[in-house]
Image (cartoon, rainbow, N blue to C red; front, side, top):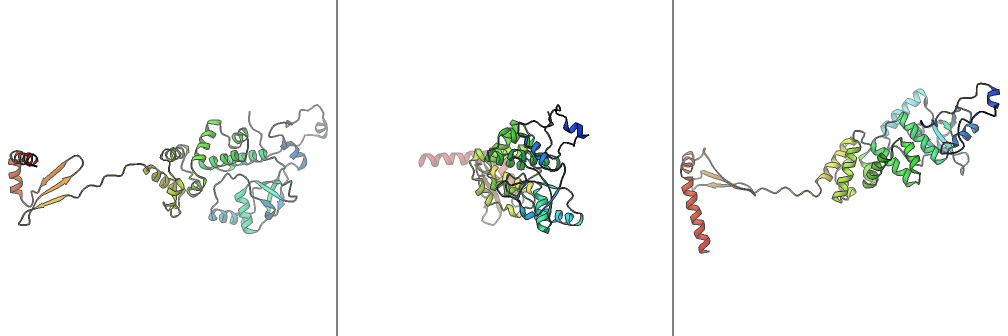
Length: 321
């Protein structure tokens, strides 16, 4: 069954007689997380938008976006200044602070309005905490495109703030398995690290889960790892994720063995006779056909005899030693 839209109130009745009818079923039930909308609609005219000073609106509460860039806010502010605020924000009154409000959705618009000193056009709704979260989630699903990690952090904040699982599932329009995956990522990767990486819209669930798994297996101090990567010099959020992922992948891997430099065998008259390379699997002797081609040919013809002679000399040294 489709969830009710918190943004739009029900249309008014067609006639006074219909509105006064006592046998009609109520449009909203009196139970459940959505029931508060009914009382809201009684308190406010159906689609009324109010002008509210931005300094009366508080921004605390779970956030569904990691951050807004200064450039993004400046662009939106310029548009609002030129054309007005086309889309209202939603706020709810603070019961313990008469005359003040808390943002439900529209934080980016509010920041832009604050930057140019304009009042906010706002829908005012008397909502419970659960209803506000549902409204925030529904608006985001229609207007925004949050990345996986932004949704995961939002879900973790809701859980930490004591919201019931059904409310979180409805707010994000996800199922229980997806919530479990989001929770695992958000609890494994420190929030400070996620903030440094950013929204990473090009990085999906599997990549974030892989980073969480590698972090857990390597027992890495991710905050310490990230502090040495210079992420502030990388402009793209996806690239910052890649840098962190590569760094974590290298933790615990055996260091590549350092290869010994080749040893050059030079004759008394300055000619390069051979190059000797030592590796974990073999000792290689390479004779030069440029400096001493005749000697290289002679060694090719006599290699078996000379190697056996050298082998016998080595055995004799071993026995006498």
